[in-house]
Length: 160
Image (cartoon, rainbow, N blue to C red):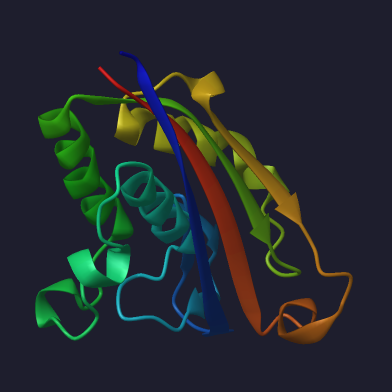
């Protein structure tokens, strides 16, 4: 019997002046950064939660707790690699992933191709199987004021 499931992931982080911001493993700003325990790459964090949710696994905070010092400042790509390993062990295939990043600053549209290429490479999936959209909050709320950024991801997977 063919088993297909979906998962939804979400993340939000506050933004401050800093040493660089990464979305999907790609640097999108040199003078902003996320306030976070790890590198704060909210796209990868939302992606991880969507992938974990699709297989009924615990969430990112349980798997990689922010009170564990070994994850302090860690590149989110390393966390994604651990989730990929879980998928390989369970013989699960990614069908597609769709993400929406909501931000006023920085603008990420110029980086969408690089982000898609990087995530596709990290997960060993086709470029067309990962999509990213950029939206704004039309200057409304903390995201609209450039104080925070959020991301939603949904994943569709198949158990082989």
